[in-house]
Image: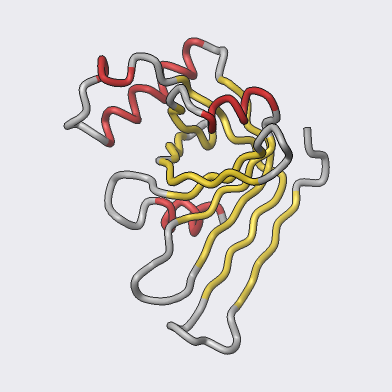
Length: 147
């Protein structure tokens, strides 16, 4: 399931693409396109100073969905809690991979971005036989002891 999710997040080549939903101060949803970074240690993202980042700092709950495919209605959706990365080694690894995946971006352009880790509480993988599949296959995973 994890590999299927990675493939859907990274379906457009070497850059992860998804949508991130956060919780606004009034409790409503906020939705943004974003670039997840999947490393051997977990799921991360470099988050710019923004309402999205303030949401995650205040209330780490999130939902993330991979971009839709152009071949079928396959989908990958996860939920959990995000937290700012404080370990300098992990932060460096995330930054290095982010820039390796995006060689045209200068690191100085994103000096104010902060790495966040997205801890998983649940995941949903949907596989289809094309558009309009009346019998999609869903696999649900829930972490039994969420943080």
